[in-house]
Image (cartoon, rainbow, N blue to C red; front, side, top):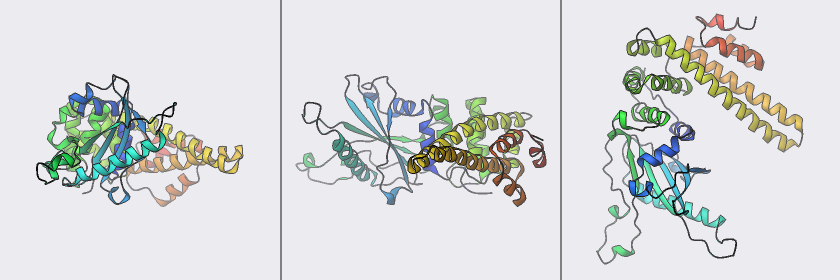
Length: 350
């Protein structure tokens, strides 16, 4: 059973950095000390939007943060995740393009202050997070890939970027922040297209060495991602890592997954309802959107959970899920966490 534990690197990384404390820990732990010493203790603010061109979106993900220095000056931190299996020798040139887009975007909104005076542009610090297997041997500056006579070099653009090469960092040193540590562990070991069981046997002990909670978090990630890992494989791996505790780990992971899923389903439903209500100008459109968004989201998550626990879900069961009410889906999801067999799930609520 081969494949990738994480298929959508972009979505995974964005969700990872959106977890409380994760982005702040990444910048605090991985930016050069000279930069972190200048930044204030305030958490970074996520600025929405991407500056990666469409032709490179398959290979990169980015996040832009606004931070403040201790002197009160704005600094922008552009975090780029490199998904290629080998380093790109022209990444610095592409970072230059991202910097230009960011500064133009910023300048279009803040050209002058309240007195009409031109506003100075902020510094844009680039960070590249790389999780490929091959070592990163590309120069860490734009000047490192420019050839010119010494007298001409002062007229050439240049900047350094900060590199986080996960493959060269020990598992125990990936981060002090638990959620970021486990996320980096998965990016480091779980995205290289190897046998999934072997991948879990690498990830599981590494996560457990960090702590029991980290092992649970790993299982929660595995459950959430749209991969081909079967429930039986997960249990077999857990039986090797924590003999006799595999059901406990799965149960806790599923409960945490349920809480996270319900919160996101509500948010999705609310956003859908708000969009529908605004488009139609009617409050009933909003309510209908909320209900529709929740039902569709919960039905999809229940189907995924059942596949994790019991294997392929029969078409008749899928049809039953598609036509179920929100209350039925909630009851079945709760039952699916501990039910010994698929048919036991649907006895809930009767």
